[in-house]
Amino acid sequence: MKKFVVERILPGAGNLTAEELQAISQASIEAIKRIGKPYHWITSYVTEDKIYCIHIAESEEVVREHARLGKFPVNTISEVKTIIDPLTSNPLH
Image (cartoon, rainbow, N blue to C red; front, side, top):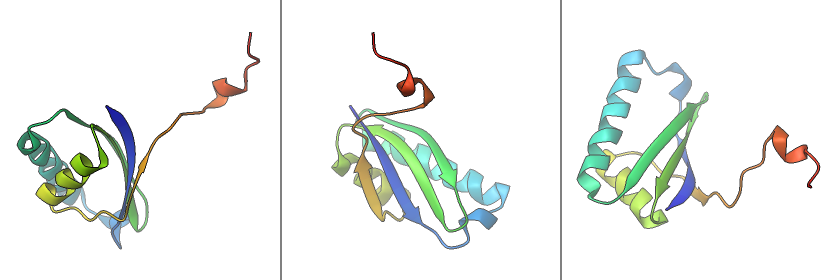
């Protein structure tokens, strides 16, 4: 399984209501159920005009299938190659 960052341009995303965000979440869960393959939606970050989603799937094609089933826009899909954080700064032993 691979981890992906999905960028969705959605003007006004930062102004979505709690009900609209709930509907988007429900659509995502329903799409995952319909895929029939291992798939995990980890989290999404809502900014003013975009939503960045973290998904785990077998391939980019499966991520695109999730978007198609959920009727979500997809602007870019990037596979995560590695993760760094503050602990990465620690000396190697």
